[in-house]
Amino acid sequence: MIVATDVWGVLDEKQRLSWTFTPFERVGPLEFGMTHEQAQAALDGVLRAALREGSTGAVARADFWLEHRPHARFSGPAVTAYYDRSIGLAGIAVNALRGPQVTLDGIALVGQVPSRLEDRFAGYLETHDKELRYSQCADPCSAQLGLVLRVQRAGDLVLSRAVMVAEAWADRCWDTTEGSIPRQEWKTFEW
Image (cartoon, rainbow, N blue to C red; front, side, top):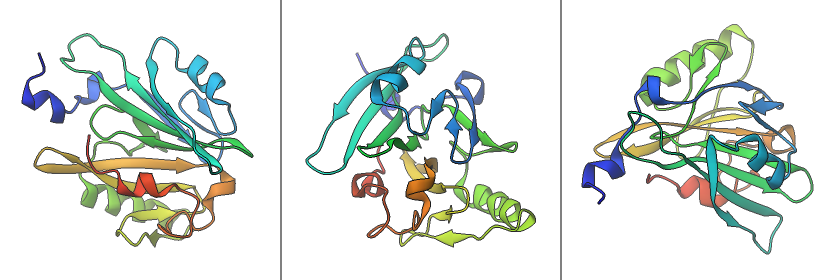
């Protein structure tokens, strides 16, 4: 039986998988350009494919769920992979509640208080001479890193949901209408 609080349960940092983000190359074991089968094999035993949706367009989506972990009372969606038919794995969105903790040069990107993360991110971009952009939803972004810091509901709170993209999708990654990130991702706010 699922208890109502399980829907909004957020993993503690020690319960999360630990991944690193290398812009335009990889997020944890996932490499941009992989096929769905390669991504599934890379996540075998850690995350399981729970949903795969093709589309009539150029983009398909797959959700990977967290396997039951010791000391965690729930499982659920952890990572959404977006595949571009011409390049393979092109976008990776990490769930704020149950996703891996993804770091960029020591900055935790997932499950964070958005305003604090935005400050750290802005400082990081400034020291690395990179431009800070904002989406029409006020999400901080960097096309030079292929990174969008979105938010996701966690009960009465919102936490950071990182979306990382391949170089081919980086141009206008902040643009909710003309960028390559699927509209479905821009509408994701729930668990």
